Length: 133
Image (cartoon, rainbow, N blue to C red):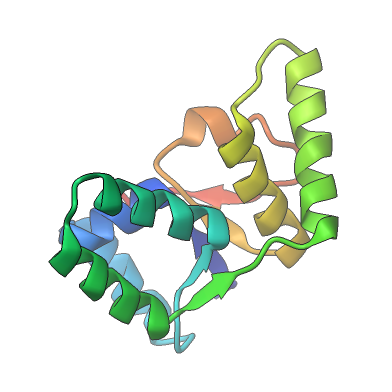
């Protein structure tokens, strides 16, 4: 099994108790001792919870994060994301800055990105994707 990184939509579904995602996570954790999420996904989920003043959920999310691994954004990853964004924008099919940052992190880290947003991410050359939803 290859190492993966969860996109925001899949991690959100897991945290809400989606049984399909939970089954894949259980299988994944039999091979690896933690889940990978990007610092962008960390930000997006935390931002959503804070905007709803969901303090108990924030606490649970922070505890969850402490058991897993947040992948930081390096300059190499930012450069990869900028390249991805530029290529897609020039082709007339941009996917947005947060998605290009997530793609850049996954590509440089050599992770398969687990996402339900196949339509956006399949445009990114060199990005391996899968859908656990």
